[in-house]
Length: 348
Image (tube, rainbow, N blue to C red):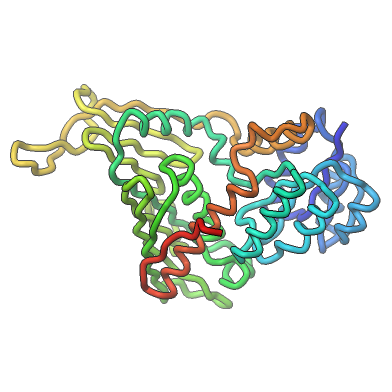
């Protein structure tokens, strides 16, 4: 049985541990590492197995894991990945894979040279809502896409510090950026604006909200809105809307998806056209899809299976692909800083 080790035993690590406990028939949970030993001890106790460490190198020396899940904050990436690659250990990394694009690309190149299997924490790609969304874009010429993620302020000191998290768009809304890439294709140019002064919090240096206009390589246009000002779920309806000439699809990530088409019998408040082209309220046929199961469990199990079989072909988000989503997010940040359009860098 392959041995799995884990670095980072809090926050998103809890999410992955819940999956590992369901996959103990496939892997031995052999080592848990965290700078706070009590966290690693708690994970080992819940797993009923595994040794506890505060030094990941020592864990590598003694456990000799066959795979490792790196579940650390964005500003901690780098040293751990370099050591993991040097020891030829397949690894799964949480998003974003780094805050520095050059560092991420260097790690990507070393992964490729070492021939390692890698995965990244973009579990939304494994949702059962993705295939019908991809089918909608094959069947309809989507011209415009609107994406929003509004939420509150996490109670994490590092998250509120731009130098540690990269801001909400990089640390959180990168899930939406990744989905746009996966479904719509690669972005070409972004133009972002940010707002601040609405959120009152100590040790806070990120934007309260931002809006990004995107031109994709295929000519499609889009907007991405994100904010951490909300105090209620009533603040905004988070979803991605794909708009074609005669239909649209609303995709609420890992929740539901709805396709609206004409000639339906169900009155929905959908919009239609009068003879002069004016938008009016009309009827629509609504096809609804709901999330089934845990996409994150599928994501983690796919990586584990890939390492066991030494075949990464079924992994939907590798480290190299995660770097592209990072490039998208950092281009948006660069545009906020310069107040100018920025081309997404695919050249390096």
